[in-house]
Image (cartoon, rainbow, N blue to C red; front, side, top):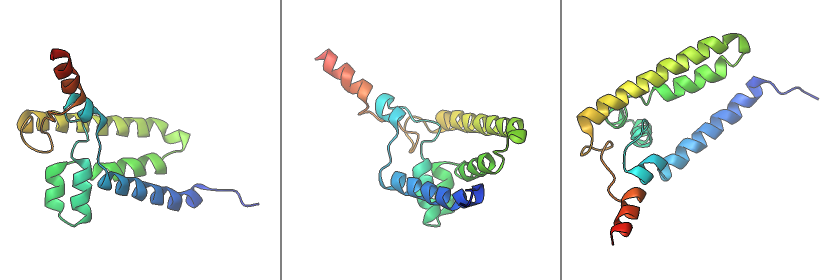
Length: 135
């Protein structure tokens, strides 16, 4: 019986990632935004990938300027899964997280609450609950 290696899993993982992306392209949902009305760190990412896949790269950057980082993060975490690279991977993930936080803050300052995708969702769950209590 052949032992399953990482190389055997990569094609399956690639297919799974493509299916997940296609799911989110067809049914975008953000739990944080639906509950609070506030955009999250990844708001606009689905539309950015949509425009990337339709070859409108400029529009992809307008919806989320870090769309390119997600595949890099996935590849780094897959390629360097060996325990001897653990510290390096953790450091790289922290760098990317900080980059996402900085970009999020810049987008919140410059785009929130009126410019898509960083606009405020008025029909969020918290607003609905508060409106029902007020009645």
